[in-house]
Amino acid sequence: MTEKVKGPASYFPSIEAKYGQPVRYWLDMIATRDGAHMETVNWLKSEHGLGHGHANALVAHYRAEAMRTKP
Image 1 (spheres, rainbow, N blue to C red):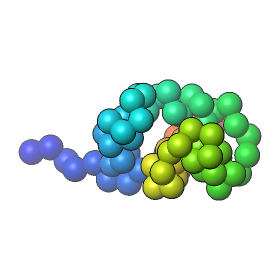
Image 2: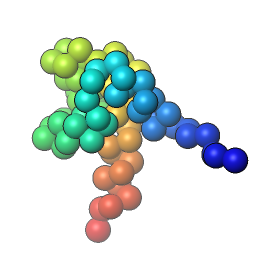
Image 3: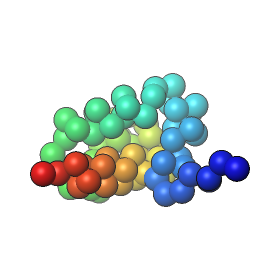
Image 4: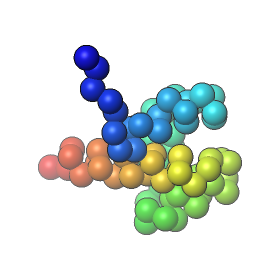
């Protein structure tokens, strides 16, 4: 039995389908930013046309991943 994906990653298949780019593309774009969470969400929405939920999921995942890999 496959475990159901939860949290921000549960949005990834629909993000890739809707916007035509792999999730890594968006995470790499977010890595170029140094703004606060909502600033980055708003940037993804205004500059790249992402919906709020998708933008928020990507930023939340990026920040959680960054915290796990921080020395």
